[in-house]
Length: 125
Figure 1: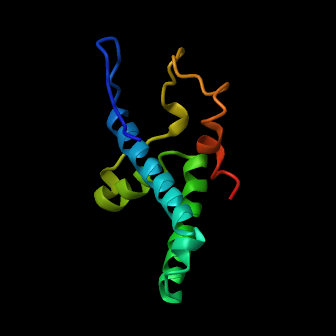
Figure 2: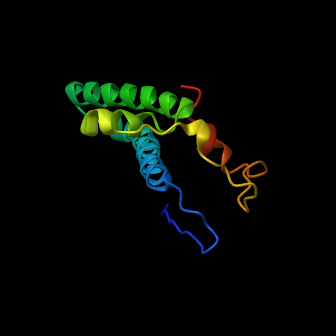
Figure 3: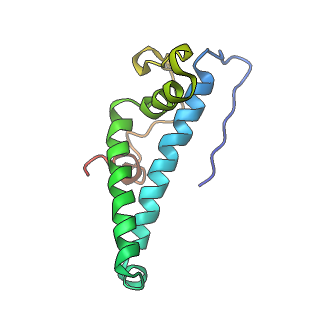
């Protein structure tokens, strides 16, 4: 599934806009990698790998699941961690509780059963 980003003339670009785009890419990549590993675990694929390769995949899968849990608590955890590592004390972390949430959205997931596995499928791991 492709991703499209847009900002209409009425949108307010905040100081956190770039951080939001980067964080979105980070947790989307995490989710997509977990989804890919799920597909690799199908017997018709998994059974063709040697044990060393399976062990590497298992290791990466555990890292991704830890990251996914961290993303659920703070979508900016990796953005902030990398910012501190790269820029040091000059980096200003983003507090996800201070990001303005749009009052109204045309995208309502509450009645979209097809999206529920995508949106909540990895939160239970």
